[in-house]
Image (cartoon, rainbow, N blue to C red; front, side, top):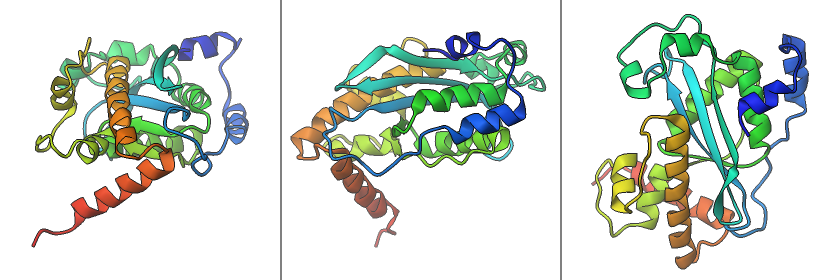
Length: 236
């Protein structure tokens, strides 16, 4: 599914009240279900932004894929570019390739974000370096829809060292971990391509989690939380 599939069913753009009403119909994320990692549906996302300043920069595009039944479901994909008419040519264009003209021709932010949250449903989210994506997505949802993001958000950049303690990669990025496992990125810094390779990495990590006895989302979430707390402790 793409944002365009969802928008084609509409004869006219939604007005603010329609967007607000639609947001009230979005499912609320609940506690972890009593299920295995294989049975849990995850949405893996990647965002492209106008820069790395979380206060000043804007969300430009969203790419997402679904992990379901222990595999990537290529029939369930999301990709859209948000309309940003005031976007200026900057050095970041050389990275993500989204020119101001492409931003100006994008989908109205409120409609694009609503379509994405309808795609997500009540499922947990995964991203590489998730705190940045979580902040930028939350900021856009609040600004354009008045919607508060409450979904669990796992950082694959933390899952990797948690589940692969024997691999020493300091301050490793997505390129480092994909190279470690021999994964191919078809178009780096393209939201959909980065989401896909992040999902491939997540499946490798879930396999390792099962071998370590962490075969449920709740168990893995607890282990991840404990690992993150240990990383925050000052070294003696």
